[in-house]
Image (tube, rainbow, N blue to C red; front, side, top):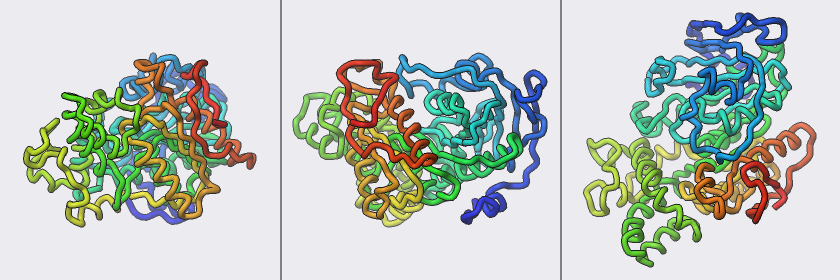
Length: 459
């Protein structure tokens, strides 16, 4: 996708293609107000779209009507989280032109899929999100979409242009797949703004980027590189990429090498190696789950995307290989790899030069993206570039990377979701009324109360 200039008009000319739109409308006929203009709105640049008039755009309704995929957002929230419902409006599903086909939803077998939700009662705002992890466009439905729709915002989300554990097969150069993630968020933001003008008669008065994990990385990148499109951003545990480290490829191999020894015997040296890599003291009870579910897979697929030559003709290494095995990812040494690997990471790297307000939340027990190698570092980067006044950083004591684990350890963990929502409210006040959020702080874990639904940003 071509570079984008700092005006919406120029962005439209460069980002929005001219592919014809295959459109279909479903649902009851639209009376004035409810689903108004459903037959006359199109997502600019989309190759395909399907419009539906729905009585409820939240997951309480879309789960029943088939306009979401619960598997996409499974495990990302605590079981006790309460969500709003009963938001009528229009949902648009579709895709932009793309040459890859990792996303099989709707039988389309086509990437660059999106979902846009337009509430009947619009507050003049737009929230844009990219999928966390390697999930698809519905992954933010429970954690972000429901909440902002109930406030009156339009919501748009993208699958980032490729999805699933094989995303590294997309593109021709190392880093291409992740580069596309950022381009697709920009593309959807521009298209959604123009779509809102069709539906409501004006572009949004305020636009926010919001995301979790890889979605948080997308927020950071957009506020660094496309700030004119947004009024602010909300970043929950965003992934930090830096060519000089730290990044996933600098600390995951150490954990993969040491954990089998620690698990087998409790080896103190192995334990110390994992802590030295950045994982928090007190997170030991989470290591086995993360080793089996996240560490190995994450290291192999991101290493394949950014350094495919490490294992030669093999693809994404050997799962759970023992240290010492040829081309084993447990022995990966980022610092010793050729310069072209760092150049590939530089293509997706963050700088800390944000240009719009950003609120960051990160759990102190994050056992996939350790807080000391991620958001602590990113907060310092922002400060070094003079952006401290634009940033608030809340370290959530007991927070882990996926809120679903709270249900297994309610006495030791704390969900991030309620703090994410309080962060969004603080961002609204900050960008619309000039009321600065509470100072950056470590938010102590409450000893009692409804942790699945309450949070205070005052520490």
